[in-house]
Image 1 (cartoon, rainbow, N blue to C red):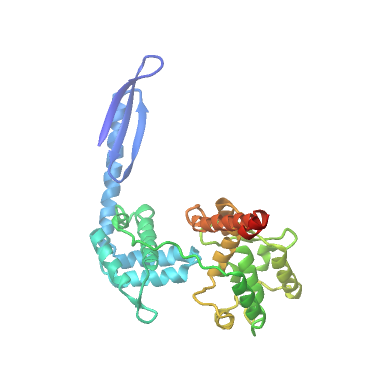
Image 2 (tube, one colour; image 1 turned 90 degrees about the vertical axis):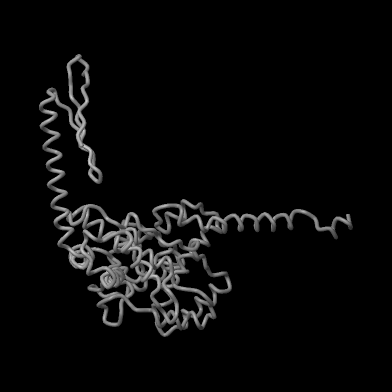
Length: 359
């Protein structure tokens, strides 16, 4: 509804401030010299809002969730780096909600479908983790947001009223010194010669597996000791520093690469990135590592940085975290490392009870 307020300007003249407010629509504001002009503008704005709402209501009544997913998969999903994962997630939503018209899609219907997805059996007899279910919610949530804000297919997204599942605290598993040596030795013995440089660089830089394996030579600048990641999880360009051992692994690979080579770590025919799953599993088994995933190399990088007195902000910059919340999980390692240093110092400086008795 519109409201008109009579004001005085600096010269003492009457001015009319008009505001048009409607739920779900950004407030419209303007100022006029004449009240009649203010009233006319307000009427035009209200008519436009009503017309747009009528259009949205009509679209919502004739479009289904399946229609929304179809268009999203064609026009939005190809631009995303995780499109295959999200495509599978959206197909699962299609099974649950595809038949529902958007006008009848309620938070309750989405929540019921969420619970069905959470109850799915995956990997043997395991259920989906809360984090996995929340990623499903995020996939559908973005599709609904685009449908509401860009396409005008629904008034607002019902996802805003759907609760995410509570996730456990972030897992931190990193290599101790003995494990690190065993793993690197196992990688050196692998039949896949690229496994060792891949694992070592992952450990030294904190790059994600996908970022590392999809690395192309035009992203590598050995003279400046860095690579530039253009396609990251956060959709932001990120420079990654290459310490000397990482450069030493890349230099011979670059020297041996043909002029038309694209990928730094290519498959046999060079047409796409290498698949290291089998080689990685074999090396992990040979090294005797328990409960350790490739992604834990990223935790290893962060943990080593923390134990070498890097601040939380510095660790976040290396890992490419948008907020410090994700990085805070490593803070206790820095504190513990500092405590260990103080303890070792005290043992060196202060005499033992035996030495005290001898004095």
